[in-house]
Image (cartoon, rainbow over all chains, first blue to last red; front, side):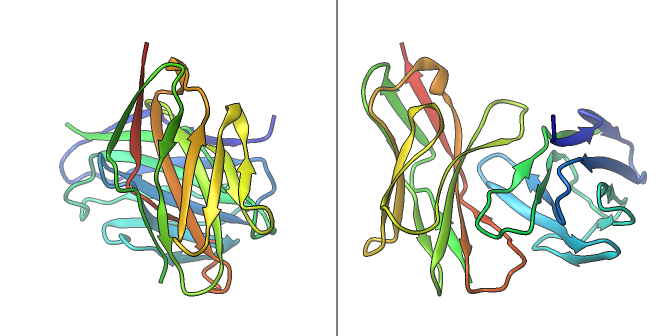
Length: 113
Length: 116
């Protein structure tokens, strides 16, 4: 079945450490997105990528970095500059047709040790 | 700019009763509108969308939504609620004329609890 796989499901970060969240899709979608979800705040866009080797900052990009070396993969690195990283992180993708919904992975929950 | 408001953080309804989860939006052009559902520690699942045409949209699991352009609303409805409908519901909008790379703007979510 086609879909989006996020790993790990749970991740713990030590102070001063960078951690990388994985997002892989086999839907042949061009665009991929990273969102942060905090209780009562909905989803906020961190970064997005419309094509390979290109990505743009979203609303809350500070303290995060991404790469898009392959169409299928869009990893997110939470750097030590992100002072409040505890949240649920969701990856999504969409194909060429703009009226289609975004497809979501099952998320990674990041906590601070 | 595009925005979405879900005015109710929490909606409680008895099983078998009709349910409504409210959503209003703001876009400069014409909207694409979406409803998603989220169960604990899971991603968002697509329920239904409004693109154009009929104002009443039917989706998964018996849900439907009514697009009202004059009131800029897209309320989610179901005639008879089930306990298994208890979840977090998100409304989302995309301005089709904004050229914003198919970005969605999400509401803050409404927690629906269906009481047995």
